[in-house]
Amino acid sequence: MAKLIMIHPDKCTGCKNCVVACSYAKEKQFRPAAARVHVYSWEREGISVPMMCQQCNDAPCASVCPTGAMHRVTGSTLIEYDASKCIRCRMCVQACPFGNAVYDSVTDSILKCDTCDDNPSCVAACPVHAIEYVEENVATRSRKKAFAQKFKEAFQEVA
Image 1 (cartoon, rainbow, N blue to C red):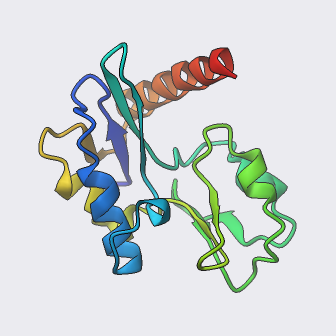
Image 2 (image 1 turned 90 degrees about the horizontal axis):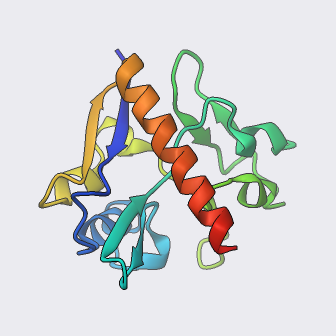
Image 3 (image 1 turned 90 degrees about the vertical axis):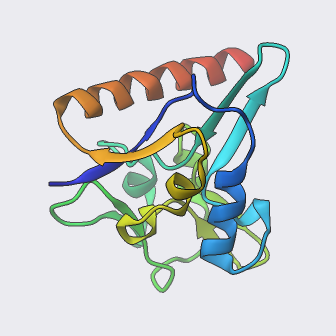
């Protein structure tokens, strides 16, 4: 059965251990800008939310990719990035409604979560279990969609 990364914003303390773990796992250096997870904080409200690729069902990033570099893995919920097919047009960056596909000028590459080959470093590094890797079922997928919609609406209010 497929798994997905579940975010629990009510548990997040904003420590950013997930960001550091991700950048080290992917780039072998502590460079937060190279992380595939980002923590957004609203200090006045006391809220922090870890965010990474939501592996959207309709995946706007994959829909706009002219070369197929951003695509859904067959039989999976995972949206994969193939750097060898990428022409660096950055349409996927523009299309992501959550800002979770990012262009990195240091590596000349698109950065997005790939669940670390089913062993997400961000999950292992979170001391309060604000990020979990769980079996996908109707309930978890529905909860994730509801959270993603709320987050999208909150971003639109700020913009």
